[in-house]
Length: 340
Image (cartoon, helix red, strand yellow):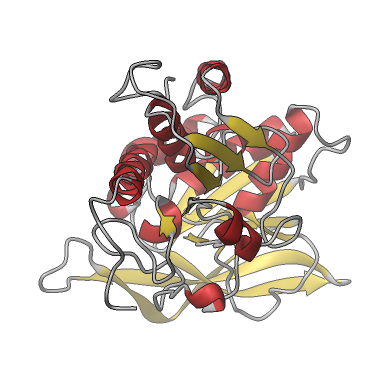
């Protein structure tokens, strides 16, 4: 996978301007490749032990060639992109210090935290956020952690997206005897699609459609079962997906000694809401304009931390658009947004 696009190394003069890119996922890597190729001094700050973000730690290698990702990152190093790994902005270095030290800052920190269910029993031992658990699996697999993540004998995965399907695969790889995938709609309307659900079944999962969790049942402080309410689909005018509606009085219970919640991801900006004068939207994404400018000069933002969880393609496109806007800004072609 190449991260140097729309440019050939060496065809642009060296520039003095320094740019800090926070996050080494697809948006950050494509932005770094574009900006360095254009002559700008590009430094990438990232919390993980190696660059790549979700490409390395969030997505399974059945979906992406990780050695290809690593080769692309080495190509970035070869043209002078600097990587500062194991550096969490907000803990190891402050965003304010980067704003003061660099000519422009690009936030591309993605959506690294799982949305959690707020139902009775959610605090029981054995209930895990799926994405963080998958990241832990990759940290162990690539030798960055000594202990592999825990896995139960009977695992219930809740959700209908790619993270849910990946959690099924990892649970089986780690030795789960039974894996159940539960989704509140039908597979036809799942983000992972019918293909994703078919892959989950081929991996050994039992799929349960039209069920929504209402309670985790515990025993001795640990999850022992999940109670679901049966759902039906109700058409909504003007929308492509029908709305799941509870069927009164109809429930089903699945035994489980482990639950993986994969019901969505939330943005993880490197600051608390409103800090540094950077405005967040109501869903936690960073407020940007058409040039990816935030409400604090000279801070730009791109990728999933702006758009919400998406696929690699949109994140890549967003990173390139932000990089082009940074170039225009540093060339004096555009100023800063006025609605701050």
